[in-house]
Image 1: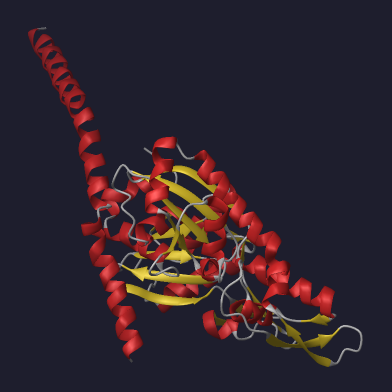
Image 2: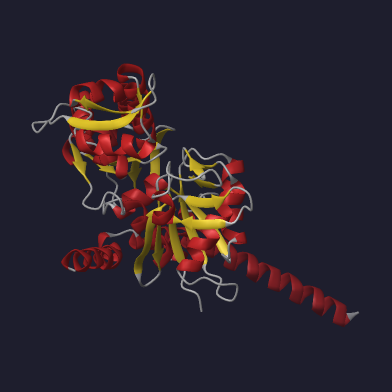
Length: 334
Length: 63
């Protein structure tokens, strides 16, 4: 008998929660393929290590962009391999709950459920990421009080107001931490004349990236390829210029939080001043982001204790209480 | 003739009973399922899942 699964199919990472067991898989959403034969060479962490370092016949790709499937066939293969790794076979067909961005279109919704069913799921249901995040962040969403959650993922940022087990207001933008990496890559290319890969850009973000000035600021040495000479070159970057480079992306995330606050009913809006907003997702770990949102909204921002796992935890809770919570799945609104 | 009348009366009676049962159950079902939904989202119901992952995380750190 298959154990039912909850999957956080993120642009950056895929996490799988197994009913009664907990998180059984946490890997980057990357797949490496042989360009000529189409054969899968690696998935997850192993494939992630290949990004930007492959010979011509290998391609390491992220089949999801902005929380949406950009390549249906590759995504289906990736989901099938992930399910195989957690013990799903043609004889054990589990029920699966998949977390997806709330702004997903009908076509994208069908693409995800079809991919999961073809990959071996007996039934595939979808749940909105901010709803799952609020459950996983342990917010009192069963009470008639305003709970606000900001989920900054790899490709999307979503803010939701939740009360009495349902979404009251929602705001989503297809901007996330990958856009921050891309902004760093573009800035270094434009201002310093060197080309860097997406992994290096991510390392810069982790090392010195910030959304607001912080007390411990250091410079970072970055190595790349000089665009003029084609030779390897080292430059020194400071946090101030990275803040400038990523400001458009950060501003658009903050603006979506402000729009969501404006949509909230006044009775719930007053709760935020006392209870604050909760930040989840890998993008929420950007230094100074909570501080910046707090400064611009005048509402306290708190970090969830398990920001990277909150979404899959919420979906995992739905799989543990499937019958009671099936009204939360997309397309099953009360 | 009598048999047909009896059958029709039985069918009408059954339909009436079914209608009454459904009419009485509907509002109650809404309350029950909403209660179940809210109870399943309570911090106590979520505790098990959160603790399971927290414990696994801590034991992973310890290794």
